[in-house]
Image (cartoon, rainbow, N blue to C red; front, side, top):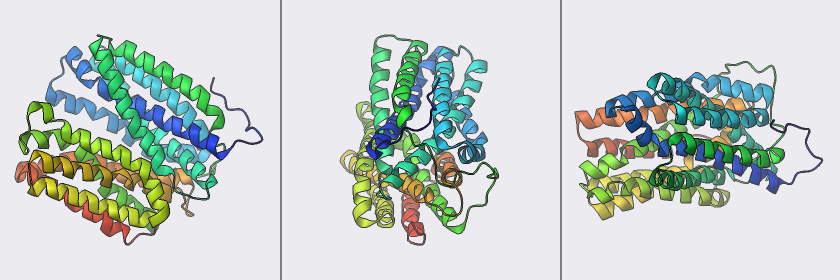
Length: 386
């Protein structure tokens, strides 16, 4: 049973920050653990490349089904209860993925995995907004997202070890789920008890105000860039850069490394320059990095460009979520759900749009389109109060 006892008389803000940071790490570990074993599960079930693309749509389907529900649950029940039970649900869905033996079992487990991912995404970010409030609104959101990214590297290393020692996905996922449950038991007692604006009578659909729509537009443009980089970096290095097979994944690694690193420095920068200027700078870095990779398609210059793109995409979403959580128009959970919903469609549409543009023109031109989206991040941020 997850401890939901009344709050102790005093929990330091540092303890809250460590606990919520641990939750971000555990959630990142859960998602990246699944990603690390996709090839193993694909091979075991004999799924084709084309078939795998269709199968993986089950996760965003689960996320889509719970986009409005997640914000409503957080507003009604509080982010603490939702995130604690949500982490358990997420970890159990991971175990289900590991033991699925057919597509008929895998597909519903993927939908449930998407549901768990979205419930925990909204609730843990609402927790982070609560911790940030204890720091008198000093920016700390990006460091939480940095821990999520760091967990991806840890999960990749553990996944490589498990594959190297012929550990099945089922046993691998049980091990990670037990680790997540142990971490949750330690962190649960220091999570934030009360959210700002929690309202049990909150309607499930609330129209976002102009400010939240603007923040959503920033997230939409930024997540188009992010989603495209996740799915197309390797393809770009293979077909445009024509890198040796040992270097095909270098672009993705460069992007992910600076994205994680940038998130740990983004709070410090936002505290000194202000969130709006940091978001504008990030948009410009994304545009410049991709322009370099498009105009100078060689291995060294493309790596430099992708490193800049990682820095450029690192801080936008955390700072946008932080700003949304301070909304005076609706509760933090509903505000985050509204902005996250708009941004989600950018993440979902980015990769296929790149494919369509590349098919009609070329892959280089499609990456120039991503550079344009980076400029849009800066342009929209200049017109929105962050």
